[in-house]
Amino acid sequence: MKQTLVMARQLGLVSCHDCHLLSHMPELSANHAAYCPRCGGELHQRKPNSIMRTWALVIAAMIFYIPANLLPMTITSSLGSTQTDTIMSGVIYFIHEGSWQIALVIFTASILVPFMKIIILIYLLLCVQFKSIRHPKELTRLYRLTEAVGRWSMVDIYVVTILVALVKLGLIANIDAGPAAIYFASVVVMTMIAAECFDPRLIWDALEKQHE
Amino acid sequence: MHQIACHECDLIHTIPPMPESATARCVRCGALLLQSKADSINRTIAWTISGLILYAVAITFPFLAIKSGSIVQQTGLLSGIQQLFSQDIIPLAVLILLTCVLIPLMQMFGLLYVFVPLKLNIRVKFAINVFRLFQHVKPWSMMEIYMLGILIAMAKLGKMATIVPGLAVIAFGLLIFVLNFAITAVDSHMVWERLEGEP
Ligand SMILES: [Zn+2]
Image 1 (cartoon, rainbow over the protein chains, first blue to last red):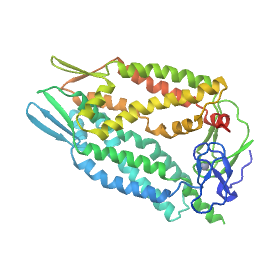
Image 2 (cartoon, each protein chain N blue to C red):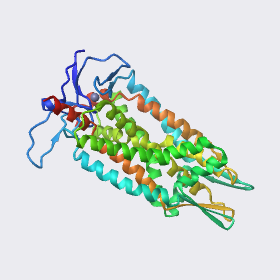
Image 3 (cartoon, helix red, strand yellow):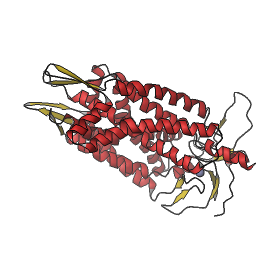
Image 4 (cartoon, rainbow over the protein chains, first blue to last red):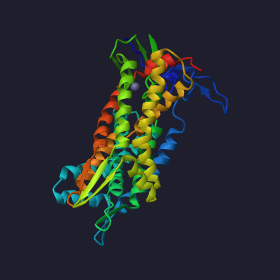
């Protein structure tokens, strides 16, 4: 299989986002769209407004990340006393209990992964905007990683909702969801959509311009 | 021979006819370009039907029970979500309903809607739209993450109470694998080629 390094866009070709059929991109006048001849999906050379959309979602996620970590995630009332727990106090609880494996899982999924995901997306956006031509392969790999692991952050939301739905033991104990739960769920959802909005082909476009 | 552009770096590749169970990767960025599957249609249908049976068990039988001293309380998957609705945490209730109940169900119905007509060699309307939707919802199907959540919740309650998993949890756990087998059996390139030119 002989390969020459040509990008589809250089040949006026476009790959359908949905069915990956390669077709000719017609010259478009304003307010007109092209559609894939096979599946009928709208064709774009690159995901539309990829950089702006990703920035908007990443910035919103950054803002929501703060109350998600500072406000209580759960409010436990047990025999007349109430106790509020943030994500971090949950981690500390498990360290005290000696189950550092669970502490590590929660810390990674709830604190580290969302944080790293935001940082990586910002780094990718900056690389694309400053037309960096270094390490495109590693950047693509980084993007793939954020796309794959981001959804696991949802685990803490599931833990909270399972506890809330389950622990209704009348006077003995009762667990309610705290305000952080909504913020945290928003962070996870927004970073997932942000990763979907980002177009990794932009990483390679700078390289192409370099060759011309 | 046909041409395809890498969806992650836009590089053009010429792909020769692929043998069964072969994988084509982008020479520049390493992205997965194509994966041909052996006996894709039969295997997808078989796994999906098994998945639907497990799903029925998972939502009808008791899911989790909590035991604290002499008090035992049972919840189903759906009644747990209903609990959340009644406590006015509607966004979270909707999120769980979508990611752990509705989207997995949509995935299975979607697969049957596309694959059964392919098997019978008949054409149905909207198969293209259904398959497109199936591809888009994939990251939002989160049953395996919910399962991890159950394990952590069990550990978290610790001394206060014990969580007893019900029959539904076992079905739910199996469903994660079965749905995953169904999805990996899908040869999307083959599906798109066969759906080509449909109304
Ligand atoms: Zn590539």
